[in-house]
Length: 149
Image 1 (spheres, rainbow, N blue to C red):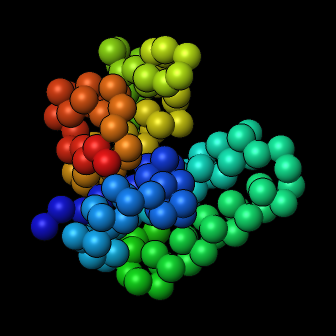
Image 2 (tube, rainbow, N blue to C red; image 1 turned 45 degrees about the vertical axis):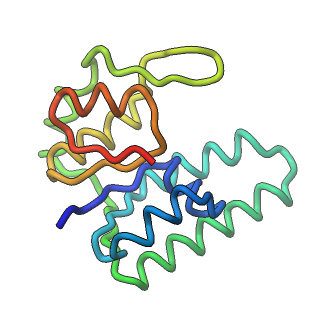
């Protein structure tokens, strides 16, 4: 049975109850999920950047906090720190190319925080889970297990 490291966009889609994410989540056990504090921090940073209205921002923060609490209560593993083994693996991923994110403004090298999450999934031999993006295909070509929503 696979284990899944949930990426920040996966968490955002879950909090927003996106159908594709909910359908996938219904096929696995929360016990098979790993939630990284880094993924949650990246998700919250994206919310803070996208929503300037404090009420909207706080609503999203509440949705993410409730999701975190629910996943924890249902048995998901919480990854709260990065150890030396992950940092050593990150060195391999830090400048790996191509590892590109595709967005509305085109293609750009993947951010370092997401590279750290991929390095974590690679080291732990778990499936990195996010909505489909070019970098998932590129990481998979390098041997990382990925699940594109």
